[in-house]
Length: 410
Ligand SMILES: *Cc1c(COP(=O)(O)O)cnc(C)c1O
Image (cartoon, rainbow, N blue to C red; front, top):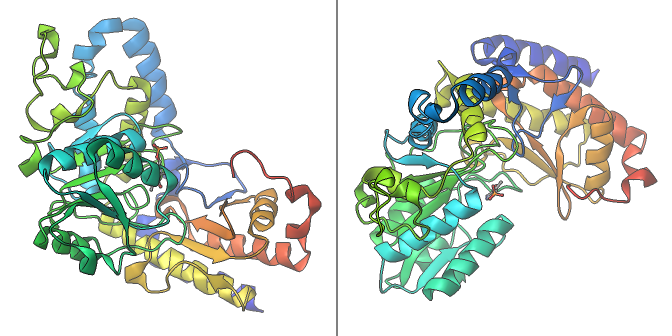
């Protein structure tokens, strides 16, 4: 029987990848297969304790002195360096705080200042909505024209008018992984800058920001980085652009001498000039503790595990749903860390799976999105998910009228 074969294959693969099984570094409820770590990462074991200590000892006991004694002031850049390790950025180029939306807004304004006289921002249709809105908003503010092109068309669309190319490294719906090195190089050949959104790649696969000469990048802390709901985002400013980085949201935290309380704004040296105002310290320190889940692990190791898991999941789904219509690429080089399936009853499938303890998510109009956060998932978990999927479809659980009304958050 097919599922027994899958059990045996899963056991063999789990044995082969035992070194990178970090499941015991996370707190997940028993009986749940969590395939939504690309929306909200699971809770790393060290986080509750870290928050308890930050609240009781640092805030409660040491009070305001903690800005110095517990390194609160430097945390945005210190935590930025910890993220930098996972995205291929040498220290001093990543700053943490605010949301991805804010960081993208800030990065695009900085790009406009670095490329004066160019009037086009080039992006792809179907980006994550906030990215679309921010691009349109900044374009209106700086006088850019927004042009859309598919990633494959982008090199041919570059010209002397293009100031910046803005793209998501991994498509949030299909999981398609773009050619970051190739597109970045093509943009540079045309004199343009690149801003990469790493929300769906950071913590899941190697990005190589420095190695590929990326100019600016942003990403969120709560997906594969597991920083918790509303965890602060980060911005990357390549060292070579820092002196000319114009902060459209100048705030006192990014001032060269914040405690001089000076009248005029003078940006700090280095990436600290991208700081804005006081960071959400509890969330920031929760993120710092969460990143320790990656200790001793390289991002290449995480990627190797992820590729094994996602290709296995795809195969396993295909054995129980022979006509499965995959939106995620089959080619390892083009796939991020998720498997996405098109189905007219996608919403019902996601809800029925959740009722069976398999948590994925639905993306409009017809996608069942199964995020694979490699550190805390095993191949055996994926067989359990596929078993549940087979039961849902076999018993038409996805057609249950209970699923015709959608929740506020899908
Ligand atoms: C998750 C995600 C965001 C989130 O932006 P917020 O400002 O944190 O709400 C932005 N862009 C992409 C591509 C995302 O996947």
